Each structure stands twice: as structure tokens, then as C-alpha cells.
Image (cartoon, rainbow, N blue to C red; front, top):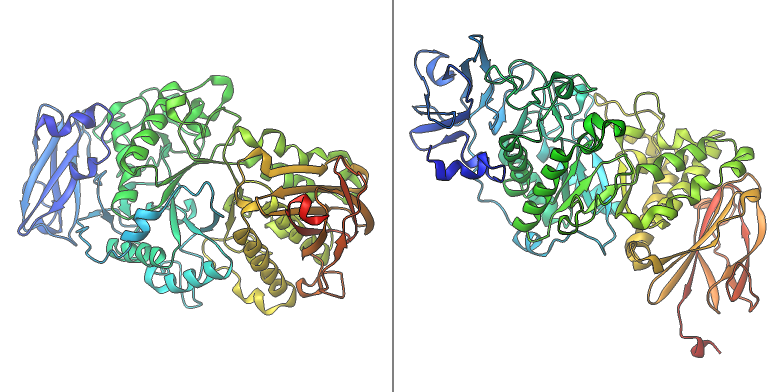
Length: 615
């Protein structure tokens, strides 16, 4: 292979290595190329040559790239690389750049044709943005278990085109702007959910073909819904048929075994090696380029920021440089139109700051601190919440340090953690009451939103990748009412820029953050023409309470989580309308007096009319 074509790959700045390596079918033959610099020999074996090692030897150049042109090899044929490794061991390896693979437990790569002339999303692609000033609400989905049918066994999976119409309708109903799919890279173990991968360019065969995934994305775009994919750049499985010690040496993983071995029993990518950087940058770009994804959520980057995720071991500067380079180059390529999201559980600074200003260059960061503090607070008996009042207020002390997404993800509803609603303290009715208040807090708090499938209907059973979401719950009044509440709340969020212009410090203000004795919190969200006041009562006591108000006028209740239609404790859906009194309270020029239900949340709206017009 010509050196000028591969120079960027070896310099760690290649975004399209998938055009150089892998299997590329032509009319009568397929070109193969693989990087294995320390291998003694490599052959292509597959269904096209009856897996005959002697039939298709590859030629190595002085860069360590092996190539072959195989007549008769065509899309649909399975293949592997027969590698005689540096130490003489012989292993049949998958193609690191394969575009498709066999369904587990089979492991061979499959030649795939990626040509697709059905894209109709040109307008969407031109007009999409990072969504800083949009009502972003992300629906995290595991495609294998979102909607399964009763006759599906463990080797049966829903297909992209069988579920896409229902998924679109569901997103519209609950005002989700984006679907975030858990990793679609090929992976050998269903229970890893795609977070322990073998094929970084290989669309998993579980849900359909490459072209069917393209059609799936195109349909979402035509419906005005974006799609984000989980990307796993930190580690990969150690299975001998995949990337581990590919040519007999630690080609993709760190040389030092202590650095190479991860806490998950996988191998950590050597993010200091330029070729590995090109491999992963190309893998990230591949899903944006070939499949028109609108963003990537980078998984577990705390394990890249710090050596093995351990702050005491210090910052992994090489890994941070890799992330900066990848984010910068992707932003350049897509003119700042794709979302780059970091799942980072640390307090490492400037994750969402521009790379030009010394940051890592992500657009958003998951606010896992907010998630943990909030859920920990609501697990407590209300009697003791007064001693943990800061669990709710603390998030606004650091919120403007990054651009945050508030997540209730799959990680919070598995492994004995209980689902979101089931985490709440108290009885069945109390749990739902508090969960409605929790979601009101979530959608009125600054930051974009993310929810895992099932959260919107109040799932009580923990998520299991082998079982469908419990849609039958909508036949029960409490769950049906919760779903209606969720749809109403998300509509309020989507329709009012006071809630989604969230990164301006002037947009949020506490009215009362200190009423620990009553477990009460009051804050306002402000836009150019409206102000909303949110009241959260996390105690079991109702109150007739007075709060400060910023404007003169009538305050109308637009949400009460205890209304009867939401199966709440009130016997009415009648909205309160209260007139502000010119009396200073909570450092505000006016005061309102309202009825506050126990374990409930309320939102009041007032128009921001000029003061002169109200006199």
C-alpha cells in the first residue's frame, strides 16, 4: 500500500482508516488489507476458498500492512485472517475493520457492501446542530429488548425495520428528540450489552443488515428524530479470535500488563499509540459518516482520563491528548454539527471546554453527581431528608462549570439497584408521587435530559436484556397515569425556552433553597417572555405556604404532580391561580401564597410583562 495513503494512519490523525483496511468488494474480486507488523505470515481464509490456508496468502509491505486481492470473494462470504504470530503461534483472527460479522457464537467476519442510495435526510443533515439551545431529551434504548414479542427465544432479536415505526411514534408521544442506542458494534456476549466489543466497524448482526441500519437511521431523520450511539473507546474483549495480541504482540493494548488489563476483564486500548488512535478515531467517524449518526456518547472516559480510572495514579496525558485530537478533528469534519458526549464520573475539569482553550472538547458531560445525590436523597425517609437538604441544592453550585446532561440511564435500573420509581421511599402510591416530583425536578433543572426506556411508564421490574419492556403496565391505572404525566411534563419542557436555554446563569435562580425543615425547594426559570416557578415538596406534609415572586401579576399553576389525572392525592385537576402581592419575601419584590401538596411538585407560570404595563 502506498505510504502517502497510510501516512496519516501511522501519524495518528486518520479518520477514514476503514477505506484503507478491511475487505472492499468490487465486481469480480475483493481487496483485503490488515495491519499486523509482527506477524510471520497472514492468509485470507473463507467460504470463497473453503477456508484453505494455502489458497490466499497475503503480501506484506515495509509498513507491516498485509494485502491480497481475492477473485470470487463477494458480499455475504465469511472470512478470517489466518495469522502466524510473532512467536509462531497460529490463530484465526477476525478482521479489525470488518463491516459485518456472524452472529455469536460464530465469530467470522463477513464481506459487506456499504453502498446505499436510499438516503433522504439531506435537509436534516444540513440543519442539525449540537442542540445547545434546543429542548434535547434523549431516549436511551437497548434495541434487543425495547419491544420483543412473546415467541422470541434467546437467539431471536427484534429487527431495525420491525420496530422503527413504533419507536418513532413513541418518541413523538413523549417528546424525545433523540434516540441513544446502546452500542451497535459486534460483541460476543449479549450480557455485555455491547460494551465489550470485538468489531468496532462491524454492525452487530443481531438486529439486521448494514443497509437496514441505514434505513432505520434515515426513517428517524425523516421523522425529525436524531440518533446517538454509544461508543466504547477505552477497552475491548480479550477473546483470542479478536484484537487481543493480534499479531502475537500487544498491538492494540498497552505493553505493560498492569495498564493493559482492565477492571472488567477486558484489555485497555493503548491510547498513546498513533495507529491505535487512528483506529479509534476512524471507528468513531465511521458511524457518523457511513450511518449518519448525529452524535456519539463516549463510554467510561474516566478510565481514560486517569490511569485505569484511578485518580491517585494520575492523569493519563496520552489518552487525554487522543480525546482532544479526536474531538477536534470530528468537529472540523462535520462543521460542529454532531454531538460528542462524555460519560465521566470524575471532577476532572474542562471536559466540555474547547480543545482550542485546553479542554477535552466534548459538547456535553453526564452529570452523574446530580443523579447520585438526587436518588440518594429520595431513597431516604422524609423524616431524615432535612439533614441532607444539600443533596438537592449542591448541583447548582457546580452546574455552570460544564455543559451537563442529567441522566437516568440503564446503569441505574440493573444489578439490584431497583428501577427509578422503585428507588423512592415509601408505599406504592408514595413511590409514584415522589417519582412524579423527581421528574418535575429533572425537567425544570438546567441541563439536557436522558432517560432509559421504561422510565417513562414507571417500570417496577429491573431491566433484563432478555425481556421486553413491560408495556402491559399501561393497562394499570397508576402506570397509565404516570405515562400521561410524563408526556405532559416533557411537552412543557419542549414548548418553553425557559427550560432549555439552560447554560446561561441568568436563566436559573433560587427563591428558597434553605427550607430544610419542611423539605421544600423553590426556584425559578426565566426566559424573555415567561417566568416559571417550581415548588418541590419532598415531605409527607401539605402546606399553605408563602414564597417570593419576581413579578407582579397572576401566577397560574401549569403542573401539579398530585392532580387527580395523574393518580395523585388531590381529587381535582383544577389549577391554582394566585395574584402576587407587593410584599418582599425571599429577596423577591412580590409574594404568592399557594397550597402545596405532600410529596408533590408544582410549576407556576407568569408572563414577563414590562412593569409599566402592569400598573
